[in-house]
Image (cartoon, rainbow, N blue to C red):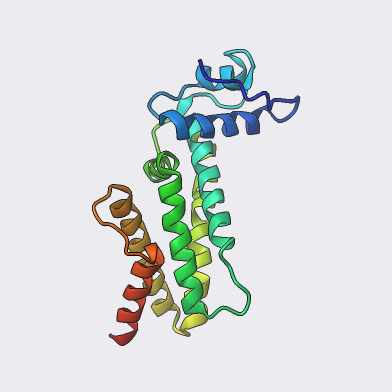
Length: 198
C-alpha cells in the first residue's frame, strides 16, 4: 500500500490530492493512478476526492497543469541577470530538457493530456491546463523577441526552438542519443552556433 503523506488539512484537500497524485505518478505512472489510491495516500475517505475531481481524468489534468507550472519555474530558475538573449535561450532550453528527463512520467502526462476529451465535467480542468501550458513557451518566446525585432521571425524561431528541445528531450529520454561531455547544453550550443552561421 502506498505511504500516506499526511499533508491534508481542512481547506486544502484539492491541493493535497494533486500533490499526492503527482508523487504517485512519478513512482508508478499514470496507468496505476486512481482516485482511490490518491485518497489512501492523503489519508481521506475513498469518496472525498470526488468533491474536487469528478473522475480520474480531471485529476490527471490538474496534475498536468501543475507540471507545466513546475516546468516554467524550472526554466525561470535558470534566468541570469544581464545574460544575452541568445545565452538565455540556451539555458531555458537546457532547463526544459532536464525537467523532462527528471520527471519522465509527469512529462509524458503533460504532453498526452493536451487534447480535449469528451467529458464535459473535466473541461474546467482542461482550460486551466491550457493556460498553464502557454507559460513555458512564453518565457522562451520573450527572449527571441529581445533577439529579433520582426514578430513573425521571433515566432518562427520560438517554434523551432520549442520543437527542438521537445525532440531532444524525447531522444535523450529514450536513450536514442547520448549527450556529449558538456551535456544537453553542449548539443543546444552547437545547434545555435550552426543556426547563427546560416
